[in-house]
Length: 381
Image (cartoon, rainbow, N blue to C red):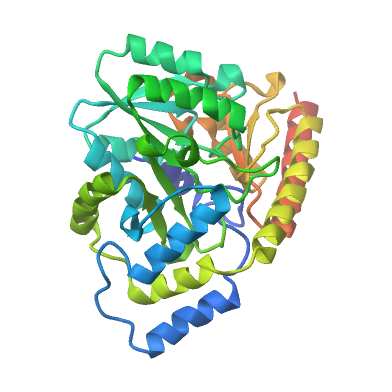
């Protein structure tokens, strides 16, 4: 396995004193008090023994009810759900269930870096599809071409929308066109929709609504409820496939803690006000960051979701995003992630990813430092 580039870059800059980080997708909000109290109550009630491996039945039912209501899905049973240790474990469970060694996985790039490590662990083959030429959106024609030219059997495609690192998402018409191609070729759709609640334009449409018999849906509570440290992920899909995935989940993690599951169940019944507040805050930060970066000459496809900006360096600042990000961290004391951390596309090398999940203060301070740094580079030639 190759080392994870994102973690590697974080380590590379970790010793720089006083560096301000616009790097990780770590929500700058605390967990709601009601959710914290549910965890405390569970601990005090000695909910500290082994949980049901697939997930506590009340939580799995709450997940079914939540996603059916939220995204017009039609899951019939809590047996169609596995509760995992975050979406990271969920990805590994799915890959190791669906992919035999040598099977191909279509991956629209740029893409979240740890996907590739998980694919290595499953001995699958990455079939990269370059979305930079279509403003980071996958097209049906690209899927057809990738399948036609693949030298290995294509078993599945990994969709992530809203996307990390680009913030791109799809509307219903675009998803319906993609679903027709997936259905035609009988490939699994691994749909990572962890940022579904952070959709800024229109309503999020789940692939599990359009192609339920071929879709494995991934979601969780890290981004929507700021519960990154709780490590709660969900896999939803056809019951017979879920039963096979449960074998792998049982071997990898067995179960997540019972008191964490009680907290997650509380999150499932929380009202929308807090989620809407966080989303509105992110949207304001996005607009502020886009305005500043575009004023500096960066090229940006305005994000429609998540909390990242994938910005292309201005021509006069070169095409080496890694060196730019490293120098800026050392000189300006502000850290961003190089585009090379999100797959192997040469076209991503000239990009950097900035997160606006940090606090308002950090976002403003970070953009001030970036502006001063870029201005100084230009003045000094």
